Picture (cartoon, rainbow over the protein chains, first blue to last red):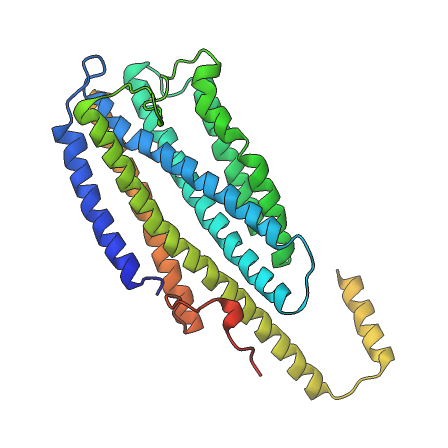
Length: 273
Length: 54
């Protein structure tokens, strides 16, 4: 129901890319001199956090757009367009944040397995690990905030503010290995001119290929999740319409009532709460 | 845990988590779409474009 020709093609390409990635990562890429086969976890661990970074940056960008589009109470057609765009960016933010949380969880799990075979422990309160788990928990909080019942505009605005606060942790996570003495190794790759590489040859290309594959998978799921969020909005609206229609029918069947009757009913409702 | 066991566990965890989430998203889309009787894959399909009920 949320699929289209484009997503079907993307899904098929992503699936094929995953199969090739498994062959490259598990067979073609060599074992590390020091870490042995454990280095193969890198092809899942590192792309996972890169995709999570990208997702959280997209969440922050979309949230800024939400705040921008809802900053003024413009009426008429301008207001309708602004509201439509705000809802679009709010869905983008929600879908991206969910993906970010999933991929951060994957990073933590695979990192934990990697840590056990290289450091001898599943977990260390190291700066990189601690800031990463904080990132995970913060965005879980963001997703919980999105689910709190509220009017859609105010829910979108408060979630957007939270997303812009949460993204501050992103550079802290990334640069934690440079700013503090950590057990975790330094960045695998530094992009840009003169960027350092800890990996070369087949390892380097397999890592880049894995990142491209993970990005395709995330994009495919993200597009579907965006469409599901729109369906959820429609379902909410349909439920509200149904409730209003039922209330109208109830009112029409009961016939006109006096102001006194209505105030008595309201008083009963208040006391029953 | 040996290196090979860690690698296999890591890859299986990643595959299971991603597939489970993807399946949940697709299934939820199907259920909601069926309940609402609509398809969301068109281009001009923003909810606010839909005519209001009479």
